[in-house]
Length: 110
Length: 117
Image (cartoon, rainbow over all chains, first blue to last red; front, side, top):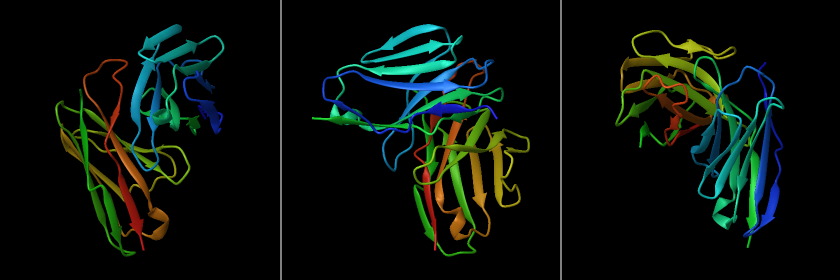
């Protein structure tokens, strides 16, 4: 089983702080990783994808990938209450489907 | 950007009813569509992979005779839950993949919340 592991949280951060979300994966051959945000009762919304070691930045979001250590992280700078949601980490499998972690619940408090 | 439309958004029906869910890619041709299921407070689990013009590939534990998938065109895939029972109540979400780029990010439909009474 090619697992994707996430701490379920909840992770609570004050407004304006940096939220750090982490994800580990078991399949060393995994190439592509995705972060989705899911609000309660809604479908996942793509935030970022990353496939190269290092950092990838997009606005307030930075994805980090370390293939040697098999972890992926997502940093959210200047966190806002509207960022409160469940964040899903996923890896792409060989058939292009996504294998999701259980998600981390983030709560940004005003 | 790429848009995936899913319909209906919510279904409430009696046990034994068959329910059809449609997934459409609106501005690209989807060679592959994926069907996921999400139970409350759980993550998304892949049910099946649907390729245009061929039979769907089901994940282990998913009954292909119960969850019928048809991908008759490059823009439409349907999932039919046959003789649905309360345990089939879940959030069903489709996604679509277009051009054969290694890292084409999947975009999800808005999901269908199925409630079987």
